[in-house]
Image (cartoon, rainbow, N blue to C red; front, side, top):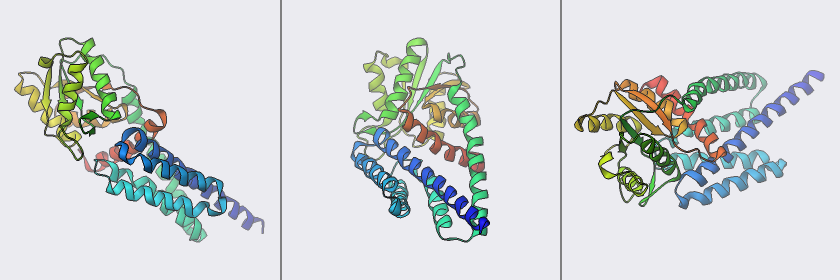
Length: 298
């Protein structure tokens, strides 16, 4: 009898942890939608937050409300046009699977699932270590060329993520008056101009002369950003073997690794920081992207 009670208590505790993890994912994604995605999607952030709040308040409905919120979250990530969101859906998919296992499966399956969950948490920690280390690196930043990696543009205006990168680029170029910038990014869905053109306009408006700005306006991914920017630097008569990369702090490890694969020794320069809950969610998303890079290569 005592063993049965203990088993039930352990199951409840595990389920509570899963529920908390699911709600945290919902909150992080809501923040990502609100602070980092086109304003027309912001109603989704309000919706998932309300579902999460109901799940916490109406405990007898908690399981189905949380499950519905996670399912909506997964569908959104799979239908969103920007790069990187499908791989980010792996985390909520795992949460949904675990919630179903601990709700309906027998003890041996729950034990196996618990072990797998612990191993996944350990793997996440291992992947996050180099990401955080690269984000915190403050090595001397004096490369003659800096590649500014693109992000979403809303019409002709930079998204918050891109604006933060551009703020870092403006600071770098002010501190290194001999350096040139390659603004890198093509034109995606919902963008009236290329990301490169949006960045060029921003930097000129903030005091950087046009002759210091080179455009790379064909790329659609980080790998293409770097490969095409390398060609632009070489066409300008520069040496692309040593560059600085400006991106979001969480993105620097992956970007530097890709640059190294192209034969470039890259210094990482972080843009301005975003809101903490938004950045937390982006670090989680980046872990999935880095894991993919480790497994499948650049």
